[in-house]
Length: 198
Picture 1 (cartoon, rainbow, N blue to C red):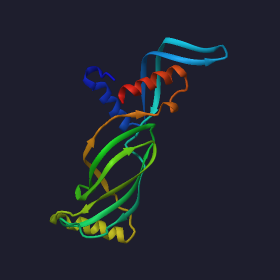
Picture 2 (cartoon, rainbow, N blue to C red; picture 1 turned 135 degrees about the horizontal axis):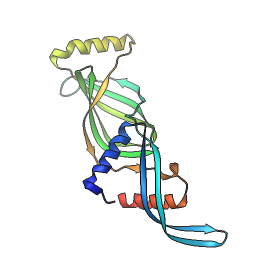
Picture 3 (cartoon, one colour; picture 1 turned 180 degrees about the vertical axis):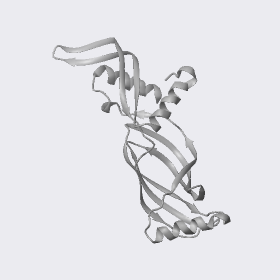
Picture 4 (cartoon, rainbow, N blue to C red; picture 1 turned 90 degrees about the vertical axis):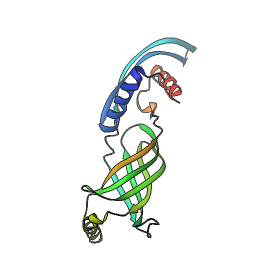
């Protein structure tokens, strides 16, 4: 695939796709199609393609659920080990291979600890992520951590945010074309498009 303007437009599309509930994409080009008909096989060449398609976006992953929250042992370098199982819902038709990632666990502006995941690929629908890490707040943040754990033990809901530290990001972006259109010219062009990406 060739990126115009050093990939600026592609980067803009990916950002919109990640943050919005929907985004449009226009595919322009020519397609060659082999069509089976009642008259036999037809080879159609240079069929013009100019389609605008509205895609469901990732929308900042609106539905994240914590399936399990375990504090199994002391963490070797200090603090408490943490194991989380989460379900992350991807409302889009995009598959995003993220790779390895690290996230800070935040209560308000206070960092409680960090969690890590390896080999992450986000697919359409529910994604179960296994995160491991630690809780080890700074000495000046012990009161915030104590309040958080007191609320947790009492069954009181508490907002915990995650902040991205890094992705080892091999960002290729795959759309599942059968969800878009069923026209043969569009599918033929889109499979050609995917081959160029891969």
